Image (tube, rainbow, N blue to C red; front, side):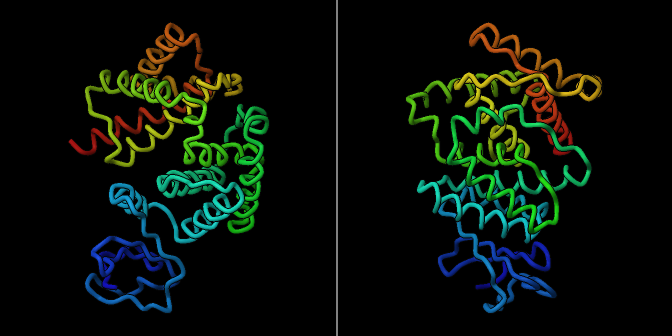
Amino acid sequence: MRIKSVINNNVVLVNTNDEDECVLVGRGIGFSKKPGEFVEEDRIQKKFLLADKGTMAKFSRILNEVTSEELLVTSKIISMARQELKVKLNESIYISLTDHIHYVIERYHQGKLMTNTFLWDIKRYYPKEFEVALKAVHLINKKFNIKLKDDEAGYIAFHFINATNDIGEDGNTALLTKLVHEIINIVSLNLDMVIDSSDISSYRFITHVKFFSQRLIKRMQSADETESDLFNLVRNKYEKSYKIVKKIDLFLNKEYQYSMSKNDQLYFMMHIHRLIAHEKLNK
């Protein structure tokens, strides 16, 4: 296989014999290499070849941000989940979970981890997913020499749940689709921009909206555990994002009798701010 681009010393993007893109991970696999050169087969530790070309393209875009170790741990966790949960996981989990693990490690070192206010509900409603997620947290802690708590297992469990389209088994697929569309539409109209999954910022936002919508449909109400000082700091700093979040909250109150917690609002503000920043950067 010939190298299409070198991401870093340990990750390269290649074209297969069928001209499909494939990500290869291996120690030193990209060192001193240039596009067009052949890969040394004995250096390959893991291949990432996703069937959906759109998903593969999005996966390729996050490679500049994540490390090869994060990619390998994510792959191991996904394989473990498939085996133990005995489910077919959507390929999109390679993007969402890799991205999540990268940022949770970053937030851990910055001392910015947040309490998972849905932990009790996740344990109760998704015990199998949570059990596998606990093992995933153990793998992450061991590999990166950190100490993530059970809160993180709750977040990882939601990635498994989302990737299995669990919400559809309850006959709520149409409702979920409608709710996701409504929330995204509010943000899109207020920012005067198209929000689709073609760029990473939009993809992350849409993924967050899906998670949030699943919780809303399950009536998993979040507790207000976000510190007021942190909430006020972000609200004042991202004033435009906060105004949009309040519109979402008013809409959900009226149409679904659901109030967003401060924790919910905080995450939405951060995601919307990223959308705004990405739009400015690409103008």
